[in-house]
Amino acid sequence: MPQWPATADPAAVEAELRQLLFKLLSSEGLAAYSSPDKLPAGEDFSQLGVASIDFLEFVLAVEEAFGVTILDTVNPNELPQTLTAWQQLVLARLAARS
Image 1 (tube, rainbow, N blue to C red):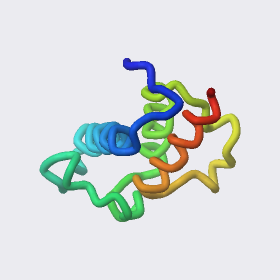
Image 2 (tube, rainbow, N blue to C red):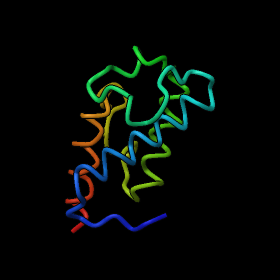
Image 3 (tube, helix red, strand yellow):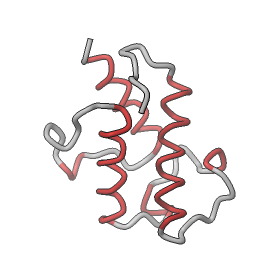
């Protein structure tokens, strides 16, 4: 797992998030998209078929991949529901580490 810098490239963060979500959807047989690049960044996760348990798996994968803490500080009802919103959250968490 690479160490993500506080000033991470937003495109690289988005690409990693897409990869994590695509892997999750594929493992659940929900991959309606042919590649991570095809996942719509602004689409609500529920519209992509992400169930609550899948969402929790995604959150944990994000925490591990980026080395950030999310569940300890964000109310579960306030967690982002799109890739774009996740990108913003991760970038903010990475920047806060510096």
